[in-house]
Amino acid sequence: MEPAAYLLTLDGARARIALIGDWTAASLGRAGERLEKDIARCDVAEVDATDLARFDTAGAFALLQAAG
Picture: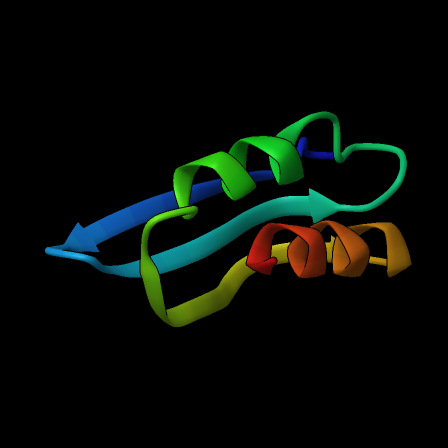
């Protein structure tokens, strides 16, 4: 099990998010809350799931919450 993480790349106010690891209830931790704060003032242009391993409804909910 790999902890949930992300890589945020900014180009001005536009953001690209690369999801990494397991975005599941067991490994999510505070990744969703950190993501929400990091993208609060950004226009997310792209979400890359290439390095996303596991994903469940907790991960989906965290992403929806972060998106506002």
